[in-house]
Image (cartoon, rainbow, N blue to C red):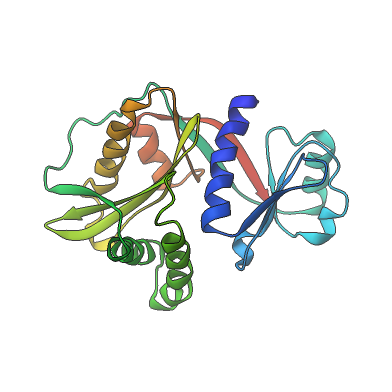
Length: 241
């Protein structure tokens, strides 16, 4: 369980720097995520009784160590919606038979560079102009706030000199988390995400003690891609709302 909680700690670092505020419950068993966006306001459920949290929150992320009492309450009082797979790369080598030679990966370190990152991120994740207008300024705000955060690295992939894909990494003492992986719709199926992942893994070889990890929607296309690249699911979190 300790190793699983280390993976969760990296995810919490992402949430606290890019989505809102993260704090432990008074007993230290649960993690509370509070955000301007309801999609990122929820509780990571630990083993102790939820108490007043059942009134303060509507969405709950059930960890594998949530305990029988909390698991039963969630199943009886909330609706299961989906699961997140927490994956790791072990050994630290991608199954990449070939990398598209036309994809150039750059690390972004200036405000102008982060504008480029944020634009691709917004277009990659947002399916319509209305959704883009709602989410892009919000994601951009957090990206810029972390421009000088030494634990975070922003990657942009270019194909034919056009920014087409992005990813973000967060490192701590024991883990390297990968987040915000997306590719523009018109540039998909060209190996861009694979090239980004390969660059991240190659860059991490100077710190072989770090576990490379990410979270992905269980059953999604992205999960299948990561499995082909050699990542393995080590635990899942079930979401109830």
